[in-house]
Length: 273
Image (cartoon, rainbow, N blue to C red):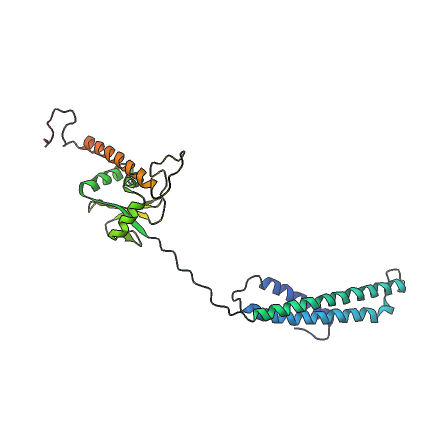
């Protein structure tokens, strides 16, 4: 608390108060508080102006008592007059500070601060790339058992035709806030894809984040070459990639199907156990 009588104690307290204000004013939770702080600062600058004038007066009034370290009074008086002059100039400079702070306070008083706008959380939507059941799903489930979910995701990514897939999902309503899963479904995620599958119910699905570009490695794109523009060229690349994968998948099925027709040609086409 100020003493109003001891200038040394009050100066120390004012210094600590300004130090605390400098620390506290780094962040304003409510910008409307700046107007109140400006008002207090304006009063503080006026008081500081008065203090500088009074310090100058004290130096010139008591100059006869001023001596230097060697005891020379004339030299001490010279220093006292020099301090008086500098203090008076500092007070004059504060006149400009007073004017600027006062104008800033007037302008700040015209501001109607509104609450900070709330930014709605970004909603990540998912589009269906492919959903397989029956024999097609069994093939992918076999890949999961043999090579893992990453291999299955890479395999099903061949059904992703880029923007065509997104438009088809939007038209047919296959767009979801979260990947749809049942009680017996399992999920796996890689890059922007989420795989849902159920060995018990025999279905497999692949979803992709809407407006997300997959990892080129998943789409069999040679990253050493220029990356095609998303949407158009990716769709074309995905089409070619899907055809090649379907051919490889058909070869894999024929090799793994011990009950299928012989590939040697000894059994006529269409006959099998």
